[in-house]
Length: 359
Ligand SMILES: Nc1ncnc2c1ncn2[C@@H]1O[C@H](COP(=O)(O)OP(=O)(O)OP(=O)(O)O)[C@@H](O)[C@H]1O
Ligand SMILES: C[C@@](O)(CCOP(=O)(O)O)CC(=O)O
Image (cartoon, rainbow, N blue to C red; front, side, top):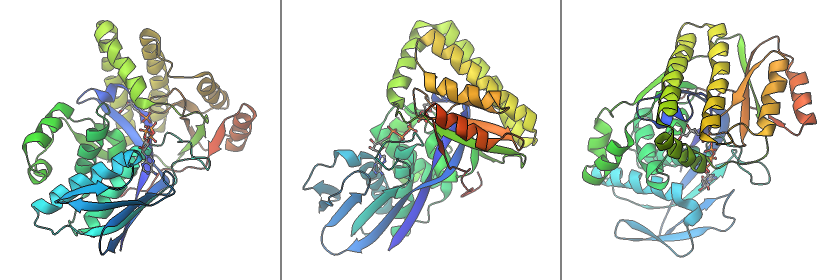
């Protein structure tokens, strides 16, 4: 039996700009996980993701491909991860086998709504990691990032893959997104072994530490948002409002690099200042692109936190999901949670996830 887990994530800064090749973001993993368990089976296997399908989905092999008796559309990230790990296993001369694969997730609420903690990325990373283990492939954190990135990209083409980096390395990461056209072309023409051995153009992942006197508090709006729809709308703006968009990218890079410096020099004030500034940059982007990033409830979430002395912003694409607060120890977190609850925001009991590997 092999078992493994991968954490969810939140964006501290750099969202939207990081979709452009080589632009930076800072993300943190959180202590909520997707767990995968794989048991060897004799003849035919099953896949079950407890949050998605109550029934087991049965599969068999035709050559090296998995074929299904039932609909597998919900399981697209799991299947993509299996496909690329097994392609790599074959390249390494590993004999493929049958297994029962079970996924459980802490990244959805009890009634099945997503929190916006990067469940698709964490599912992908957890399957790559655990199946890699099952086949004794000895994958490093960077290998896990790369195979997960290829798998995720094959399902959802417009993301920065920052959520994959946070989930594969854990802790807090500075992330510069790779050239995804290059990855697409590489996957078409080269083996996974070759792709893993290369330094990917523009990709950079570095581990960061939060100063001891800062803490993170997270609130959930209760309404899920579709990241890829929001990202597509911004892509339209890129063509329509060229100058404003370029100014946003420039300001984002400057601000996120200052934030990264804040982490490297343990400078809490610089971290809080640049974190807050990113809220303003997102507000500008939202205005000229006419995309509703900070919903009314997210504005309340941030304003309450700022009134009490915290620095607050939306996380990721916005439009719902979560908002985050960075504060020093004199913020009254109980009062913050109480005021959030009064306006319909659910405080999540989250902490920064442990570092899995240093990048
Ligand atoms: N437990 C799970 N098992 C299998 N697939 C899952 C599971 N949880 C999520 N997924 C896949 O991920 C998709 C949700 O991904 P999506 O990118 O919309 O949200 P997210 O990654 O949770 O949040 P966000 O991108 O806002 O941080 C689901 O439709 C499903 O395909
Ligand atoms: C808007 C974006 O920069 C962040 C999306 O974050 P989330 O998945 O909404 O938490 C998109 C991306 O990086 O893929």
